[in-house]
Length: 231
Ligand code: SAH
Image 1 (cartoon, rainbow, N blue to C red):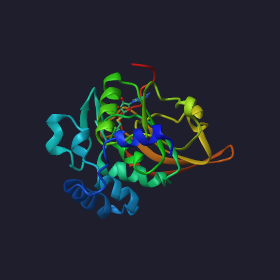
Image 2 (cartoon, rainbow, N blue to C red):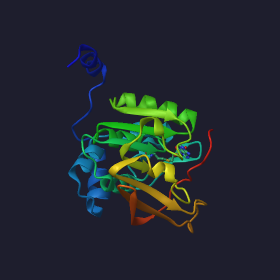
Image 3 (spheres, protein in one colour):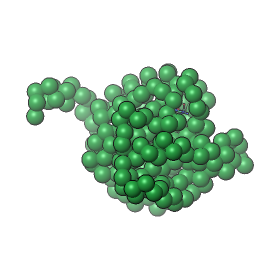
């Protein structure tokens, strides 16, 4: 191994591999009990302290079965939804993954434990900045946070084996789908973005074979809107 790379590895804070008790309880009660079976996903989420990804006022609520505010009108997703999305991505250790909508960086930290590299895009500068700090504090050295409008993806680092969108758009842009590698898959919420109880969004998965994209619907969901244009 080149000396530089070794030095980099030594400088990173160690990753906690052992279960964090409240996180492990959250995983048992909210994910395993509702049918999430992928042990790698369950293990990654059991080892990650969700309190590090919420603002101080929500620390005591970090493991609850709901999304929480992270400021700027945005939310950290409900743990179960993070589990569903991550399981459907069917990640392999060699995968490179694009996430659109960094938010708290919790989802990015989960992904970082299951694949080789994560590129995550966030349009709000303050959230991108705190995401970098949080990822550093949990030793997620394989995540690149880019502050940009991610509605068309990030072609500079394409193609990706997997793409995950964590904000809802009416429809998925062709440019984003085209950043998938052949055989790759994307998970994203699509539908009305007005919010409220009548909001109708569907979490769906697209699989690429050559130039064909096959769509499979997963479940109804409610996400904050994907906002186009820079902050
Ligand atoms: N994955 C996050 C939750 C995301 S909330 C987590 O684990 O906490 C959705 C995020 O998408 C918000 O932070 C919002 O600012 C961001 N977002 C919305 N539109 C965007 C766009 N066009 N490009 C990049 N990020 C966007």
